[in-house]
Image (cartoon, rainbow, N blue to C red; front, side):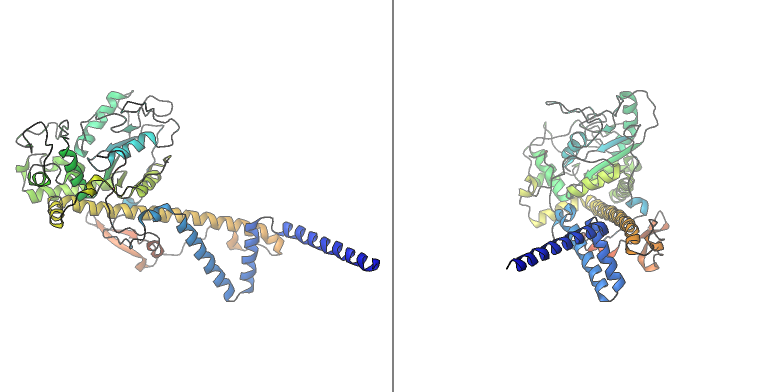
Length: 468
């Protein structure tokens, strides 16, 4: 009995020593989990067969699923159908990253169009950006002080930083002629060679129109708007009023639509265009169809040339593109709201059709802007994923280089940190567009992107702060 117990005791000791030796060997061969995974992959590749391919596909599928579950931009829109681009844009149109130097002389200029959610976005600019020198905002004061680090100069020209220095809701025509002189007056020394980066927010024309009607119905007038063009304000005959009293409070939607001088009609197109091209507010310079066609093309051109624009309907994507464009980050994420006072208004289909007719140029501009916005977002996300994939590949090559001596073989030439030259893109993988009469080549978005981004339906979203 004693000999049997002693034998069992020795067996347990030997087993314990074997286990301990195995643990030591494992820790020596693969000290980290990633290296053990690479060893497993290496054994699959060496063994060949279908197992390696299956394992690779499974890993890729898991990687995609993990990415989708962690991607807030895809979750924002829900299960929407694929977005299909309609317009061809150049590579310069789609890659809008700028070298914004907040410590230098660069200035962001915010063109604030009424009822597009600009109030909320403007507050994000002064209260929600991570800055070395944050804007100073005090309770009870509408304006904040947004100085550059180490200077008493502002880097932001907006309602909440400089006030309405160029007039209430100044448009593109007013801002481009007014901002440089105002900045020379505000900051010292004057006549600095500044870079001005214009930004704006657009909104679905029907809901923006209804939102403005509800705002006017409560007494808003925007009488302080200057409408300066070519150095002068329009006369009363050039810009008649839709009402005779102090305001238009209590007006019905029918009255709002019936006024032929209503500036709410195609407001976004007019505010983004160069009005001097059509004689400013002198409508007798050309016929109405020709006038608006010129304004639309000007608005599209100016929109493409802006450093950034966002869409009220896509708050998280707007945040993402702004951060990537200016290399600035917001502290708190943007919030998307589904219900507003505009959406609570029951508008018959025939009335909505009438509104779209009254805003036909804004409808066309918004479709163009939405297409450009989503293509920019897709390109930015593609670039981000490509960069992340390259970083992962470099990390794997580095780990393979570390594991090669332990596996008893020299590293292969492909396992260096240098990325091999990319294969040429086939002709059918490209598309051609025309800009200013010249053929411009632009890369076709990768097919796998369309499965990751669905953006088709447009719902009404309005800003958080500017609630009725």
